[in-house]
Image (cartoon, rainbow, N blue to C red):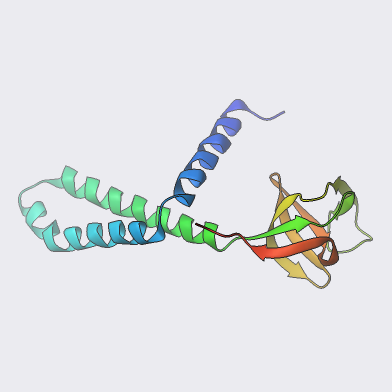
Amino acid sequence: MHHPLFAQSYLLLKSYEHLVEHISMFYLQLAFLTLWIVLFVYVRKLFRQKKRFLIGLLFTALASTGLTLAFKYAIQQRVYLITKRDGIPVYSGPGRNFTVLEHLPASEELVKLRTVGDFTKARWRGSVVWIANDDVYDGQKTDS
């Protein structure tokens, strides 16, 4: 049984991911560049005026924007796999001689992690599984 804190953290992360997916990469890059320029130009002046709280706030905003930008890039680089038919087995390792963990329905979505031979390591509903390359369609997620 999972601890409620993990469930809340997962929901918070999913909400953050949903928000980041809908923010344009251009706007994130613009915000990061603007904050970086403001800090670069004014940090010495703010330090002399002993406005350390404002400096800390600006650096925190810059770091947050940078992390969000990195997260957005990671989301855009994901490759999604879709199962071709009902009853496709997923394995504990890269081969049919490994334990079958589950049988997936048609059109189930997995996130591709890496490929080894005829099998792909993927994330499915929070678990890491292996699936035969012939059992899935491989394609990039489109972002509008």
